[in-house]
Length: 167
Image 1: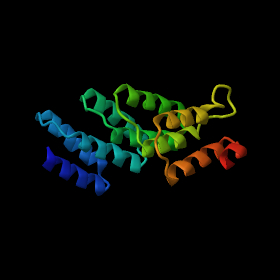
Image 2: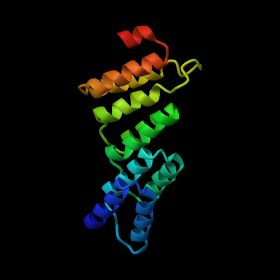
Image 3: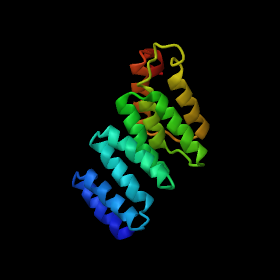
Image 4: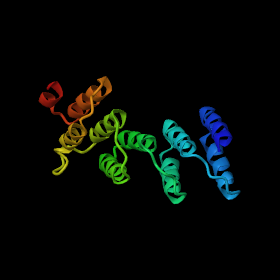
């Protein structure tokens, strides 16, 4: 599996995620169990190339194949949510991550802030979306880095809450 991982990683780095996925499917057909990292690399490549539909399909395939998801698996999905304006889905993914007893890290929470920025804050029920993410972040007692601060400022600025962004 490590050798196959190296090959599929190389294909993804060469901007050939479709070919990597086809080879992964071939491995599954002959009974080779790929590493979780192999799935993550292909998912990340689909995200990098903004192939959202293929990414969604591959995410479902990962679950069907019984891949033991890790925090790294959720990062591209949250990035997709941030770039496609799916703030609510990002929250569902976060809940799924917690249900699998995975511990979110600072990078993942930064992506969750970015995704929460895309919520329709003018619609009732979404006005406190960013504050919910903030409460989740504070509950984890993680030490923020500059990326988190940028994501928080961006989220509040998108919500037209200048005072919160400034604070």
